[in-house]
Amino acid sequence: MYDNLTAVIVTRKWQLARGFHAVELQTKFRSRLPPFDDGAYVDLVPDRANYGAKSYALCSFSSRPDAYVLVVRQEGDDDADAASPDFPLNHGKEVFVSTPRSDAVPVEDRARSILFATDVGVATIAGIAKRLAAASQSFELHNFARSPERALYRDELDKLRGQGRVHHYFGQTTGQISQIVSHALSPTQANSQIYCSGPSPFVDLVHRQAREWVYSANVHDIVLGGGESLS
Image (cartoon, rainbow, N blue to C red):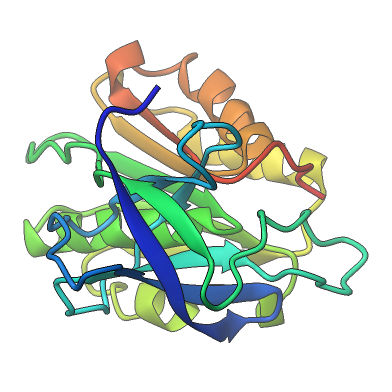
């Protein structure tokens, strides 16, 4: 399934928000890891058999060439409404990481960019928003979280308000999320660029509605983690 995997060791872990950790992965022999753009993500594999792979967003605040920092769900989260945790990433655990990948961000003055994020997907969408802002491209971003305490990257997104419109939503039901997505997309032009990231049910919801308005190639899906429910 994967041709290029690098063995890494979990070296640090710290809390980013309620229910979410940052996890630092370092190469075993301090070798350099491939660089990546804001909004990039990797696949993590628990063993070389390539079973149980999951995709994780990369944090851009790590400047070490031999380490990546991922956003993961916290193991043992006691929030009854929380998404199920990812596989354990305890200190000293060896895992295998793929080469980072990221979606292209077209720079078109007349194209509208609409971004949707929830859960760990906000790390990827925040990176894409930063790239759009750096290119002086306006955008509209919709971020969903179960509560303010569980909202990742909220401050980082708010700093981008000068370039784009940023909306936060807390505690929305699946039906309410669907209505917000529908309102954000209708009407929009067929050449609009739609980016969505999070667990598969959320990405599927946005994708279905986006395909009613824009070209298929303009819908950028980034599925992270497993298939948890939206509410």
